[in-house]
Length: 353
Ligand code: ADP
Image 1 (cartoon, protein in one colour):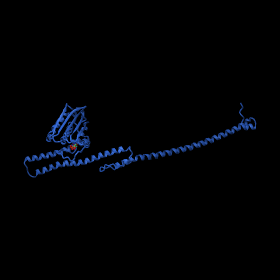
Image 2: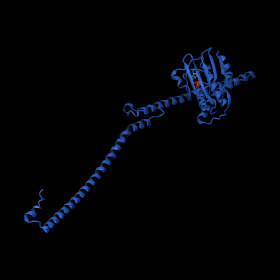
Image 3: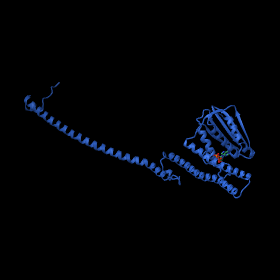
Image 4: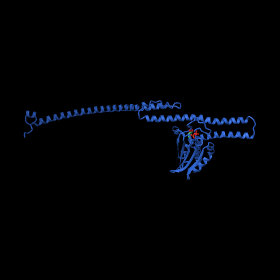
């Protein structure tokens, strides 16, 4: 193996002069230190520049994200803004939503559809309320006019006592008609306000149905209708008997009113799965499928032009539904046009009222 050669300069100048070697090394070290210092200085400068660049880039990126986000949010909210503007144009005179549904994002379409359904329902309710005002005025006008005419005729000259009695009877019947209508309106107003006086006690529904049937039987018989009550054992509920009577009587009146001549009415009362079920079945004109979903709404009459003698402003079933709901029960109807209808009321044995 050869020994390592000495440094070239030293080798040329002479053999192993250590003082010179130290000087060279010292200069080399100084040079190295200076180079290192320059390197550090330049790397500090580079780092500072880098830091500034990074700061500028991140601030720029932040600004871009902020602006982009703002723009995206605005873009995303634009359809909602259009919907909101369309809704603000809806009024009681025009319930249409002035909106092109095809230009809306698919996510918004079901909401707008629901909104349109609600507006449609509101439109119908408004129309019915308007119609109801006209109906109520008409209903009150007829007995009032009859009352005034009867009184005017009676007052034209002195009459025997018997004639005065007849006049008073007629006036009483007109008064009763108006009283009944006002009572119905008040019942609904009380239901709305939630201020109904509820006097709950144990009621045997079969017996109550028989009482109601006895009350309306003369009216049914006058129209040639047969009315039967079927009971299947005792069926008691804890409820307000007056409201229960109102429910059954309203259903019976309708079964009489909308029956065919010589038809039948069957009332069935039975316990059923912890409830008490009351069914009122008639053999009348029935209810069209499209009318069925509205008959429990206030002032709804499937055929408003139908002439009737009694109180038929479309309030009876609304009261029935209101009272049944109050008792925590349920009411529904099965019907076939031209064949008849069955109204079914279910009441919990321990009702709320
Ligand atoms: P109304 O006082 O006009 O009878 P209701 O609220 O009791 O009002 O009934 C609403 C509408 O439902 C009626 O106008 C009638 O068209 C329909 N309806 C109710 N009961 C019967 C029934 N038993 N048979 C056929 N239609 C009925």
